[in-house]
Structure formats: C-alpha cells, structure tokens
Amino acid sequence: MALTFDTGKHARAIREGGVPAPAADAIVDAIADATDSLVTEEFLRNELALQTERLRAEMWRAMYLLLGAVTLSVSAIAGIALAIAKLF
Image (cartoon, rainbow, N blue to C red):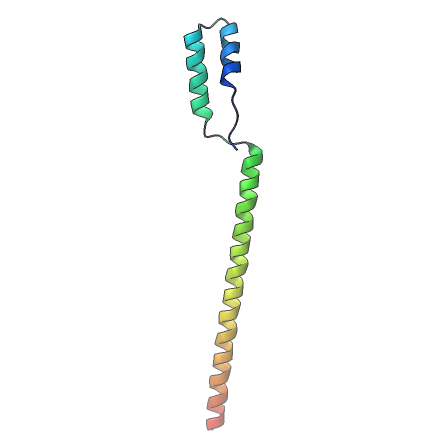
C-alpha cells in the first residue's frame, strides 16, 4: 500500500503561505513523484512477515526432502551390508 499524498490539500497550503500557484503546483508535483514509490510501515511489515513464512515453509520442505534422502541412503547401505554379510 503506497503512501497517500493529497496534492490538492498541500498545494493549497503552499499557496496560502504566499507561494505563487504555478510554483506551489510544481512543488507538490515534485513531492508526489518523489514519494510515489514509498510504502507504509504496516505494508512493509506485512510483506516481511509473508516472506518470512514462505522461507520457513521452504526450509521445512528442504529438511523433509533431506531426511527422506538420508533415510533412503541408510536403508540402501544397510541392505547392501546385509547382502554382503550373507555371502560370508
């Protein structure tokens, strides 16, 4: 959620401060352009929490895959060891 900037309100306030209308409008437009890509702290916190949850889910997924691979490897090694033991 981007920050909201009431250009009309601020242009009026600048004009009331004695700045000519074209200059006031230019100032407000420049500020609006400069702050257009800024976001609120609440939005940023929510996005960070969402990314943290996604990362946590990916880490658990990777851990379960690794556990499965280790279990499979240990089972294969145990099977080979038993087969070799039966030969002797």
